[in-house]
Image (cartoon, rainbow, N blue to C red):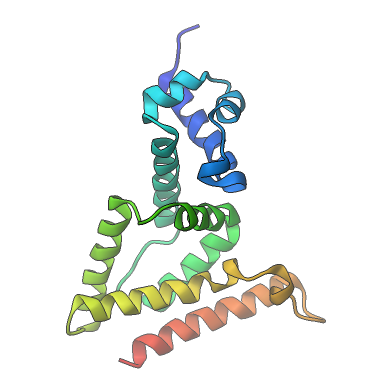
Length: 186
């Protein structure tokens, strides 16, 4: 049987996602990742250079999937907030992964920074804002609104007499309305 390097790389990314979500960068172990991926540890270093490089690749891959599931639309920030809310509610591991990144890293990756700056420029143009700083603030507020649910402890998400799915839908509607209010307040 021929060796399939693309399949090995994909298995490593999937296994690493689970390991990093559960344990973070510092707590993750390459031997557990390799075993879960049915690969050897050397493959991690060959494909990604280091455990940190693997973490960056996992984060970039998952953020790319998120971008597909919640397409950014500077002309419809409330709609974007709703899509982002839905995507993050469906993949709670991604929130944990980004939290680990913030806890264990001094800064965002260059790709994250460039993506954020591109989005801020698009928001500036769409909302006719005076500068990128104002646009960055609006973008960050909309993202914060959309991610609030994912960052809340379960006990704060609960509402007596309301099903979890109904509560989530009410919160989603509030997220969209809040993002709309932020955009209209300019």
